[in-house]
Image (tube, rainbow, N blue to C red):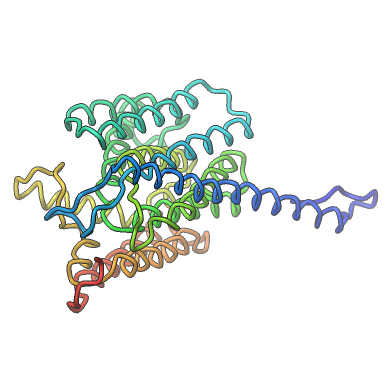
Length: 358
């Protein structure tokens, strides 16, 4: 961001410095509001859940050993909706389709809270997710696959990919800190993309990414091991929906390598586990303990250590995303796959220790 030019064509260094300071101050203020808001609102929700005794009771499929409040998404989801709304207003988004997408996210949050409380059928959940995603597709202005297939097929593939992403994000929310780490990492990656490519199509996405990072940090203060509360479907489902839109929107603007690499650990773990369970003819929608991160905790490693490993790997993935521009996209995707496989290898080959997650 440059300051105003002087008559001789040079730039005013002091003005430039002031412009940069204002930009930094604005970003710091923006992120601080959502970080502090997340921290405080999660504390309020935690007290509400305790008072109402809304608890996740341990069972043989659980990765926790004590009853823990479930429903932290009652704090995260409203802040997420507010974040996107503020960015839409700030960037001048007037498209009805974008606001309908945001309304669909709020609707999924309400439905998921009902599911947390009353265990709705899988058919109802999937049906409403498809409805929300079909509404949301119209908030993606360009073909996600870059014209490789007809537009109608692009939309169909996006719908199924988006529904899958919502569910994999929900499936993977199984230990303390993991979803906060994953969502925050994706948000950070999108924010860095906007910094490195300050184009109009990425500016709003960058603000959303920074806001998601701030919200997740505030939530992780309460969700880090040993977690004082869990996200619940009311948090993981709308979060997966909004993140899915951000990633698909990023891909549609040409940054498909970034959109594919940032969530690659979640994509690999969830998809591999789903296929494995489907081949064994198991009910893939039922809770289980077969994800790679769950195998690591079963070998005695704490939730904090496993989530930290994922965070470090995600930082490496972010670095891979923004390797030298001359590096072909397929090479960066291949490098990301190596990072993910290395993480998975460490998880399944960890020496067995005494359990530390209780």
